[in-house]
Image: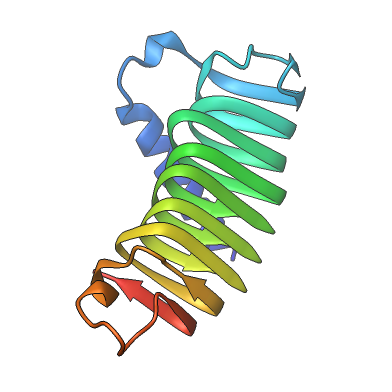
Length: 167
C-alpha cells in the first residue's frame, strides 16, 4: 500500500511538472472550506491540496474529507467522504465519487458516478451516463447509453450485476 501511495504521488508530481502554464498556478492549497483557504478557490493548484473541504481547478495530489475539482482537473484525489469534479482525469478514492462531465481513470468507492466513463469504476454501486470505454465492477453497474448493449437488443441490459463494460 505504501509503495502504491508513493507511486501515485510521484506520478502526480510528473503530471504537475508537465502541466501547461505552471506560473499561473499555486503549488499548495490548505483549506477548511472553499472560502476559508490559503489560496482562492479560483486559483489553479499544481502540487498538493490538503483540505477539510477544498474546491479548486487542479493538477494535484488532493487529500481531505471532501475534495472538489473545478474545470478540467487531474491527479490523485483521496478523500474520506466525497470527491466531486466537473471533468477529471486520474484516480479518485472516496466513499463516494461524482463527476458531472467526463471521467478518465480509476474511481474506487461505495458509489461512483460519471457523466462519461473512460476507465475503471470499482464500488458497490457504479453509474455512468455514457460509457465510451470502461469497466464497472460492483454489485450494481449501470450505463444507460451503453453502445455495446445497443447492438444487442433483448439480449443484454444496460445494467449488470458484478461487472459491466463498454468498449
